[in-house]
Length: 293
Length: 190
Image (cartoon, rainbow over all chains, first blue to last red; front, side, top):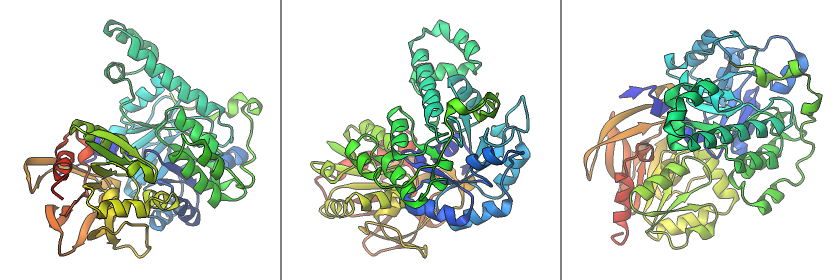
């Protein structure tokens, strides 16, 4: 009997495919998310929109908060650790969370290195803006990738940019000759064996969800049609006027992403989405997606 | 042979690939009409609460029950097993088809850090099967007409009742099509 194998770690992400993972800050929100049909919840202290508003250092959530959320639901619970903060990750693993998100939404703890994720039994998901970043994270042991988008904005434009960059990177590798792959690995800043694997299979070796700025059922369906395996919705649900019906509508839009009639039906009467910040108004220094190396 | 895969949520792609490896044509099932003309059906791994809610909201519960009760060979893996079962040990009810006479304990082996893979013996399959258990359920109570095909630590993890086969583990994750092949052989004999 073997635990913490690559197949077991990547396997849980496979089970989440076609689903919605929702940011929650309390046990009550976690129950609302589960009731709406979320496949997992992300336990955190403040949603990205509030982190953005309040400023200061954003850290791992209080263990009591995480445990309350774990106790409240039967679906998997994820929690965020700061980039490079392997002790926060050790603590979260000891709490029995099902996945750790080494996340740029929190304030990075290391400006040069990410966590050695091979050292853990619990699987990790990491953000990426393009193929090279994704393969560096997978090389460090990430069992799932999410495109970063720009968390806490309610603007889907960055999520689209990162998803398109990922797809383009994969397609490009698939067109190269074998003798070109080492140069491609150098340019991508990615491990050669993973570059070779993507070139051969035409896909990432792990599941890739979209994240960062999704606020509506149509946003979720857009990301699914662009080829992601599922979606994270952060501030978009619990910063909207009426979270429960919106959460449910986003779940349904993620399953029926190719059916415009169903999308029209579930998009009706949801009340105000989160207010949001357009990317054109966001100062360069306020862009969370730039964190990660 | 048309092998349907319930495609509401979960590892649909892996089941479709396993069905193809077993020599069948995979068919994704999202609405009731997709059930017409199938020779077998797989209900994938995923989140059983999500799959149940979507099936209920989109009118799939009764059509699925009818198709399975009329003899369609059906495989449920992990969440799929929970969805087929008559009940769970949880206090909170969830949407289940109730066509398989077992009670399951969800997340029985623990959280994700306790997830594991192992070689297990399965009745009717000659060599051991590499079984991947992910936040897996086990079967707590088995009804009279249910045959236990595999156990781990004394708990049933694979059962058969008539045209239904259910596993706690994920045969679709290992590239081994023997469990899906079993389903295709049941067609015509059920």
